[in-house]
Length: 206
Image 1 (cartoon, rainbow, N blue to C red):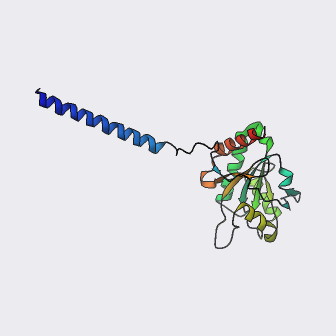
Image 2 (cartoon, helix red, strand yellow; image 1 turned 90 degrees about the vertical axis):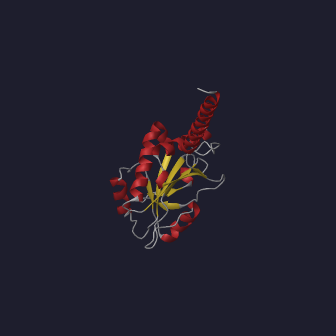
Image 3 (cartoon, rainbow, N blue to C red; image 1 turned 30 degrees about the vertical axis):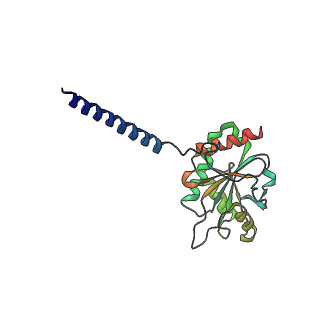
C-alpha cells in the first residue's frame, strides 16, 4: 500500500470514529432524563409555602373530615367523580398501588378523593365507587355542595367536572405541614414514583 493510500485509510478510520462517538453521545443524551436533578422528587415540584386549602366537610359515611385533622401526615389528594369511567378509576388505582408500595409507611399517609361533580357525587355513589376500586378504608371521599367545594377546587387549582369540560385528573401530595409539594398528572402518576416522593416527605419530618 502506498503512503497516499495509507493516509486516506487512516483519515477514513478517524472520521468513522468521530461519527460513532457523536452518534453514541446523541443516543445517550436523548435517553437520559433532563439534567434537572437538584430536586429529590419524581413528581412536579410545587412552590414552597403553598398551603392546601382547609375545609370542614363530610366524607362518604357522613363523618367530619378536614385538612387540619390530617396535619402531621402526608396526604395524597385525588380529584374524582363517582360516575367517571376512565381517569378517576385510574387515579384510585394509582393511589391504592402507591399505598401498597409504601408498606408500613402507609400508616403515616392519608388519601382523600375530592368530589368534582357534586350534583351526582352522593354518599351512596361514593361508597360504591370506593368499594369497586378496592380502596374502602384506604381513601375517603370528600363530599359537599358546589358552593362548599368551590374553595377547595380553587385552593388546589383544579376545575370541576362540567357537561362541557373534563376536570383536571391529577394527584397532589401534601406534606406533613399542610403544604402542597408535588403534583402528578394522571398520565405520569406511577405508583412507585408517588411512593418515592411520599418517603422523601416523611424523611423531612424525621
